[in-house]
Structure formats: structure tokens, C-alpha cells
Length: 534
Image 1 (cartoon, rainbow, N blue to C red):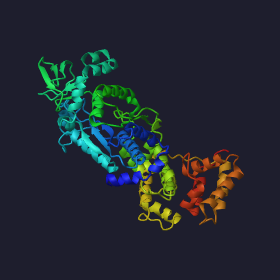
Image 2: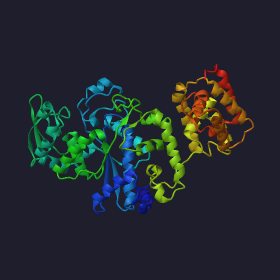
Image 3: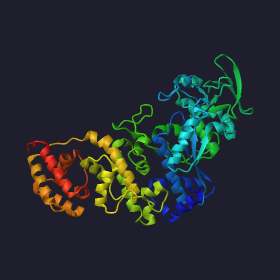
Image 4: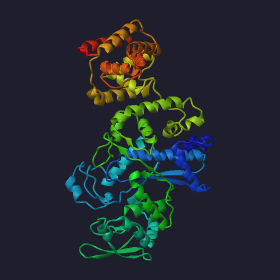
């Protein structure tokens, strides 16, 4: 979709955006206030280090920044141009060889060289950085993000940063005064904000600067063999350390908004001070919380203890992942496989409400922020949790078997008429196979539970075609007759019949699975084990 069409669609919500309380609007108002009535173009930025492949953090940062950008467009009626710059720090030196890459020995020969000068170990692109940049762009394109890609190497070499680099050189002493107190004694002794590119070895050199000449635009430094060089800071002959580089980029590109993880709070503060020292104004933004793994520990790319985008998308649509990113960005959240079903069903619940809501309600609905104010969002007639339980009860291994149950529950529903549900069916089968089935543990019923389940089977006899609500009433009635606490009754149904701790609204499940099939499932469960003492 063209930017002007997108802006018009978002801008139509301007009236309702002014009082919207969703967090992207709170962030976007910072940018509106920053403009102080100006209508100049606004720059949003996200950064990416191409020493590795794009990951779930990359998705989260671009998705969340896009949500703030959309909110800004709505607040301003789409009258102010915006850009989202996806910036690749591909001029960084290769610090170590990632263990998951081919051609390790070849890569080791290029340690210290800019990533755009390291050969592609996969042999498909001009360099390792070009390969990963292509993966990044393909990754972002697959989600439909609107962005302008920018390469650090190309920008440095084209002279786009020259003015900002010279400003940094003029503020050299101020930058050093900001950075040195943040460093340890050993690092402090050799630190320089400028990293010259060795004219012979092409190594990004971490060396002390012997002299700097702001008028000439050069730095003087000594190689480890004693050779002294005078290097211009412009034209890609040198680059900046990452915190000064971040500050310089904000200044050079006029970045108005950039968010960062909570672990970078100190870095944001230091880069902001540097940006001011060289004559710029640091962008607005906020620090989002980091994700935790299944054990509540911080996710680390190097440890590989997290969940990748590819893994999430094997079990759910990207909208559910975007919802996970939207919700409570300043709260640490577990990011593991068991959060997927809840995120899926929450998304479709919001989607079902969205089409029926008035514009002032839509703009507070997460779907508005995920879809960019689309007129409607795809919905499904059956929840993901229900599909998982249907697979569990039927032991279905193929989509056609599930669709047999679904078409009986929702007459006329087919994979062709319900393409969103068809995708969900495939995801449910995959998720069940990988996560639910290995964890299933059936238990024997107590005497009380056995009696209650026999009574339920009797009450269900003749209820073929009954509504889910009528069936649920019978389930409640049996539970009230035999259990002082209904929760115990439903827990027994899930554990004895489905082999799991939690389950669906049982009346809806029976209506979907079938009355006869449910009665047979009860009989099989009661015959499976000797009754446990009650």
C-alpha cells in the first residue's frame, strides 16, 4: 500500500486519536510535542547489528516503532510525512566468528574487518553483511513493514555523515569527558571515539588517538608496528565507536524517535549527552522490558534460550506475535512456546470485536495498531484452544479429520470459505504434536468422579444436535450434584478425559466433538484404569 493511502486511512482517525489512551499514542504525543507546530518530516529509527541473523527482538522493535508511527500519523491527520529507517551497523568489525556459520576458518582470517568486507560464508552475496542485510530486508518485507533500509558502510562512504563526523571531531574532548568515566581503567587508557580503518589491513582499529585536527578533519594514530598514520574522519576512512556512532547518527539523520531495550538505558543516556555535545537533539523514545525464557531468565542470543520468530510462526500467525509485542511493553514477559495459544486466541477475540466497534473504540483495540487501522481483521469461528482439545480428544493427525468435526459444528464451513481457520487448523496440529502430546498424562478417576462421569454420559444420551449452552447446563447440573466446588469437577474432566490440567468450556467442546464421540470418550476413559480411591 502506498504511503499516502496508508496515511489517509490512519488520518481518518484523527478526531478519536486525540484522546486515545493506548501506549503508542502516549509515545506519539512526545513526537508531536517535539515538533512544536512544525510540519517537517519525522524520522523514526530502528537499529540492527548484521553480525547475526534477524531475530524476535528485531521484529519486536520494528513492530512497536511502527505502532508509534501509525499513532503519530493518526494524531496529525496524516499531514506530516514520516519515515521509518531500518539502519544496519554493517561497518562494524567482525569481533568473533559465530559458531553456527559454515567456513569458520575462512571467516577467522577476516576478524576485525568491516562486516561488508568479510566474504559471505554462504557464498550467495557480496559479503557477510550483504547476506545478513538481505535476510533482514526479506524478514521485514515478509511482515509488510514499511521502512527505508540504510547501510552504515554506504552512508559513511557516500559522505552522508561527513558533517556530523566533523562536528564530533570538534567536540572530541567533550565526547571523551562523557565516555571515559563509564570505562574501566584498562579500556580508558586506549579509548577513542574514532576507529580508523587501517589503509592496508582494512582492520577497524581500536587504537589511542595521538592527535586530532578539527580544521583538517583528521586523526593521527600509530599502528602496532610503530607506523604513524593521519586519517581523515570523513568518507568512510574511519568510523565511530557504537555509542558516539549512535549519537552521531541521530544528529546526522535528524532522528525524532527510537526505542531501546531496558539493558541500554545507560547507553541511551550517554549517547544523548554526546548528541547534545555535537549540536544535535537526541530523539524521543522509551525503554522496553526484555523477554524471559521458560525459567524466568533473560533471553540471550548467544545462549539460544529464547524463542525465534520462525518457531513462533510454525505454530501461529504473525498477528499473534505482534499482539504479544503490543501488550505491556514495559513489563518483563516470558517468551516461550506455552504463551502462543493464549496470544492466538486473544488476538482473534480482539479481531472479532474490532469490526463491530465504533472508531473511538477501534483505536484502543490492539488490532488497530497491528493492522494499521484496517477496515476489518480476519476472524475464526473456533478458538485455537478448542482446536487443540479437539485434536487431543480425536487423536487427529490430519487436517481433513479435523475439518470433518468442524463442518458438523459450523455447517458450510470449509477450508476454502474459512482460510484463516484452515491456517489455524494446521498450526493446531503442529502445536499439539510438538507440545501437547508429549506432556499428556491421564489419571484414573476417583469413585466420585467415576459416578459423575457416568451420570454425564447418561444425560448426554439423546442430546445430538443440542446447543453448546444446553450441553453446558447439563455439565453444570452433574457437577453441582456431585462436587462442592465446580472447579474440581472440571479439573477431573480435563485430567481424566483429556490428560491435561486445563481445558475448554466443556459444553462447547462436546458440541464440536460430538455427543456420541464424547460419550465414547467417557466410556474409554472409565475403562482405561482401575478407579482410584475417592
